[in-house]
Length: 314
Picture (tube, rainbow, N blue to C red):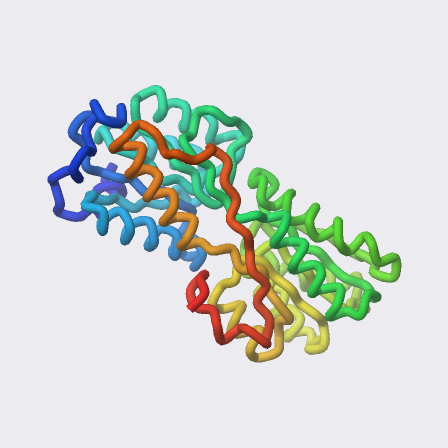
């Protein structure tokens, strides 16, 4: 409860039309609760910041909190938002299955939920599920990866959390492209759970067993950066590394030549859309959009890296 209230603004008046009779959300509430994974990851910080800025520009009070990918903590934060009669919840969830119950609980309590970045494995309970087109982005990244490796060589794949549907979708997107090149051989695949230090450790172990690798493709930039650090420590500076997210740190590595490419998923845009649709639902009872919505990713390479900033085009 304290973590939800700590970041709230002092505004107390609801936007015009934001009443329970108009949209069916909590009566008289002016609060939009924003719940994401840890802001230590710049992607999640970017989407939380964008959601907060958009909501406050529309006249709402906001609260920002992190569930740290802990489903129990997520449930507590959603319960707190319900008890505060939040007008809406913007949620980057803590698991495709584990989040179904808490989202349903909020919906049943009259607090509409708008999912960003990660889907849940059920439709009809969240008002929106706005995610990057992970399959399209992964295929873009894999095409550049293949090109960088000249269609041949040994490579490693680092995958994300198994509980996150994005991990599986991206891995499939990578493999749909790479499998078309018989001279490319995947010598190892490991989950590093989206974590940089874990990716570093896993990559060190992989290199001990498979010293002859030419490429690493990672399900997010954080893991790609961990791989870059491990490769540097092993004095393997000619290995092709491709990530996914479009983080500022990855862009810096691309400019420096230690990463080849990343697929940008526009964190800020997705978060802003969720808030805009929450505002419309609060005022009218409808978002005017389908529940499932995908935003295409963009490929960032050394040729266009100067055109991108914090998970967005400049």
